[in-house]
Amino acid sequence: MTKKKKGNKTNPIKVQKIQKVLEQQQPEQNNTLIFSGVLLAMSSIGLLIFVLSDKVFHLS
Image (cartoon, rainbow, N blue to C red):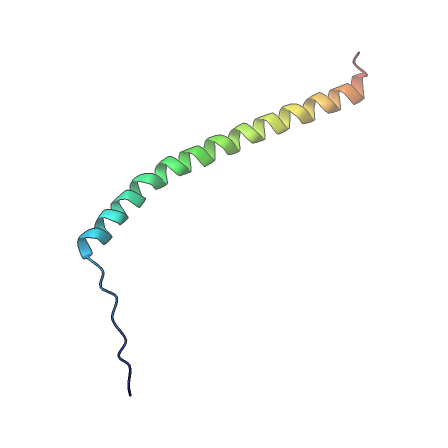
């Protein structure tokens, strides 16, 4: 009693469509990640400057 393994039957047209969709989504995701990273860095630097200036110059 031997069992035969069934090969994966993938439709090459479907594979190509999936690859095209993934290629279109990647630049959009990269731009979003870059924008959110820059925004996070700017807000962190702003908060750091505010805290340091408050401690140095004793604002209030």
